[in-house]
Length: 395
Length: 243
Image (cartoon, rainbow over all chains, first blue to last red; front, side, top):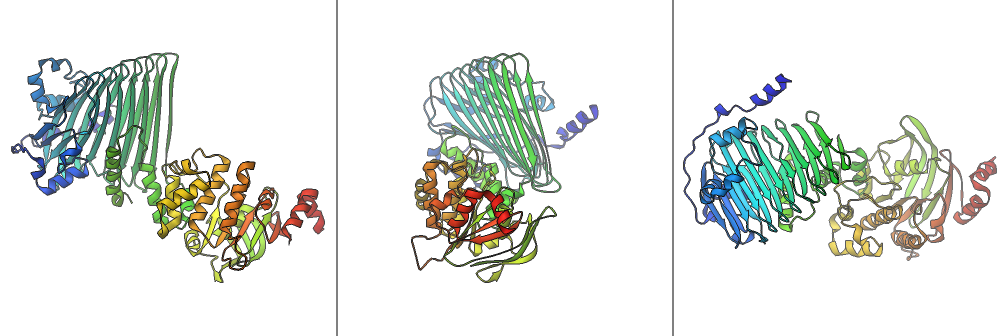
């Protein structure tokens, strides 16, 4: 066991990454950024040319906050460090959903924090458009350690798109992202995160979510591009009655990519519900798809679904679903299936006149297109676009 | 249009079809009767070219071309289409996408919707293909795909099984459309229909029928006469009749 732990810890040596980056100037109009960078950001769902599509924007390049703006009444978008200065009461939230001593990455984020965003919807405010946040690495070999804080006050609604990506010249680096979400009574947050990394990137998101009574948290995570090592296990605590969480993870591991991605829901109040859905494809990389449902009180319900497609001889997928019912009266279930594309399905499509490769493409596209209930059409289009952009690499 | 000569078919190394020959002319509709397990589906799947159904002897000619070794997609593109008895569920792929795939170059959104509405399948278009479909919905969805594909040779595997009385007339009407039954002299399509019960023949006229027993064509003749005989004597009667 200790061997395994040491091996995992050694995958990312913090000392090998640079902690310093040149300062990037603040940009009042982000559409004036170089088109190469904007193109990369757009692929990760961040639109800088048409501000009318977003309720707010936060843009960080390396260790500089380059732009931040809330474009709608009742929304706040700023750097998390600035928010802590502005609102001393935020210390009640800081490191409360994620433990600062959880591992060396959370400790690193505390020791060498480089901003991160603060997004808040005031009570009852329902944002009409998504708020977007972009964490961009422009310097090769850099460590970027951000700490984000999201608060949806009572009865509010927020859609957040986070695009984490890198400049075309960057192939190596480290991204540590601590994210703490607080979903207050009756509030709803849809959080869509698109990760577009590079073959030598190490990525360690650390996410904690607390949902109060009747609150809803819908998380969509997409990582379709190569990454050397990605490991995350966001944990949601449903502390209020009838809290609801739904995770949708879509992963593609190309050759050389190692992804260890899980989702955990702790159902700690009556009527709480959780659904974890993951779709994983390997074209040569290695994926561990984890899921953990904990039923701590009666009258809670959780379902975990993991499906994996192995499209290459070299790739592998391990699905590790865990159900932890701690009292009577919990309803927890899971289903998992890992394998290659069923020949019968390919032939079914071929009987309609599609070639073998066309049939496989249709099946793979269908596999990745998770139907996400309650997703705004814009975000759905964004997810679809991310999948289409990666199709050539997958097939 | 379709000529099958001395076809012998193995599945998993076991011979299921023994030297079957049949000939379907342009504009004709033939029916294939036979008890469960007699090899009807195996024969149809071999004609369509699914690799699991290995042709060990004989040949299949379509529009004069020997297609015995052609893969299934090439046969489809030549103008052959099949309605499956039990098609697989393809998760994530919507019925609409399947229909679109069938239309190929002729893709046309409104036409798909109109066809689906005619088949009482409007709401099913945006569901995953065959996932949670009832028996009748599967049959109609298969026909919808064939209508979109408009093949010259239509192979139908039990289009009437699991279809309720309300929908069987509709299924019949769609098959007649596929087979251009409204035309008398200018038909360019032909069909081979597997039916276990014969119900579909109350709605679709067949020019000829065959009885398949234990993988061999036992007899052939007028579809109505054969069906009447099977109804009164059962398939056991067919076997005795030949002896």
